[in-house]
Amino acid sequence: MKTVVLVTGANSGIGLALCERLLSEAAEGLQLCLACRNMQRARAARQSLLASHPSAQVDLLQLDTSNISSVINAAQEVKLKYERLDYLYLNAGIMPNPQFDVKAFFRGLFSSGVTTMFATGGGIITQWDGVTPDGLREVFATNLFGHFLLVRELEPVLCHAGQTSQLIWTSSNNAHRSAFSLEDLQHQKGTQPYSSSKYASDLLSLALNIHHNNQLDFCSCIVRCPPFYFKY
Image (cartoon, rainbow, N blue to C red; front, side, top):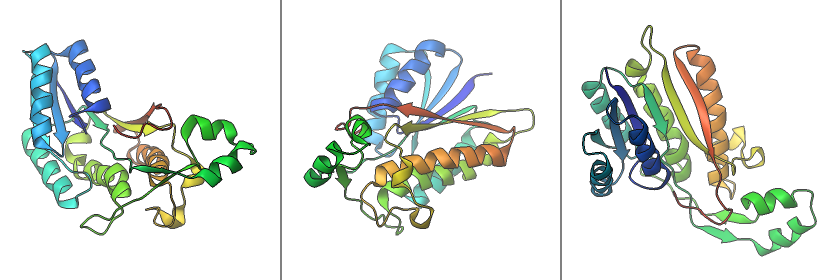
């Protein structure tokens, strides 16, 4: 029986590199599903993977985690196609184009957080966040809420007696407690929506792990990027 793996945001960057690594290690025993927003790029990614692993089984799934209807439709398609999911990589995400806060930079030079500032860009980078057609903040919806909804919708193929599924979130060393507030989950009042969403996803991963007890194993994979590299 093949191991069934679904990766969100799989057409480029970390997601595509992950798929390449998975196929390199276990192509024959793997049924891989690339869940992507842009199907043209998804097909290109699939062709690239099959070029290096011609015998691999690689499926495509249209999924936009910023769109509630897209998430529900994608989950329905998964439940019809697969009896179970062994691994679910929650990798899709966006980071808005940043703006450099000069005043915050000079203040940070003489603060105790200067090391963190240079390591992550925290406090000196501000971001503009849009609103989705569903009325949610775009970064919150894409990075966190869409994945949470996906997990809930996929519970029938994740939570089986005698089966432990693995869920892996792509986190970031830019996930900071200082950027997150329970009173402002969508970060509507702040300037660090990406950092807030990643910290929230770490918290959600822990909460879901407790909720599902032994049926699901959650973990976060921290991705370390230079502070001024914002796209994945």
